[in-house]
Length: 144
Ligand code: TYD
Image (cartoon, rainbow, N blue to C red; front, side, top):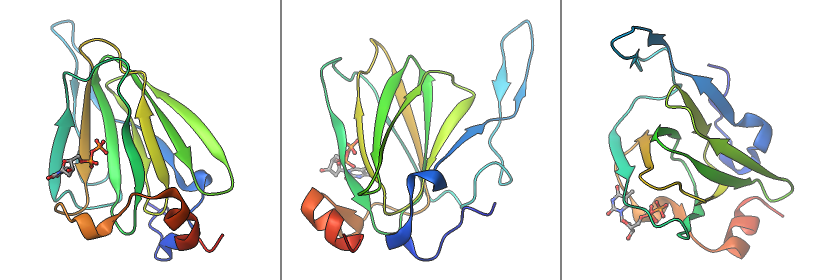
């Protein structure tokens, strides 16, 4: 996938991708499969958000090198994305449609529906040093 960008300080909202996850439709229930062609990174970690209060705000940070793929396994939520110049609100509400977030993008996740589950596939293990948790620092990282 062409979105694999080396210079993460220059990533833009246009680098984000809504990716349709291949599925096997069946009257007994659908089966969605993520294999290596689906997303442009090797998965090193999987985590999920659940029991999220509807008024909660998650995220509020950017990553320096981490790629993430967010999937609304159940219910819905909104992802507010910022590249330092533009802002976009993406609503995730289909378990077969995920959002690829490249490094160097600020994200805030909000408006979780009751019982929603946000699955996150990540390109690396947890490392607090990869986080930018202050928006002014994020703008500096972007050279803005
Ligand atoms: P954070 O990534 O800030 O959550 P979110 O973006 O969903 O709001 O993580 C919340 C806390 O959990 C923070 O203290 C770091 C910790 N954490 C881990 O220890 N391991 C992990 O893999 C993740 C994602 C978070």
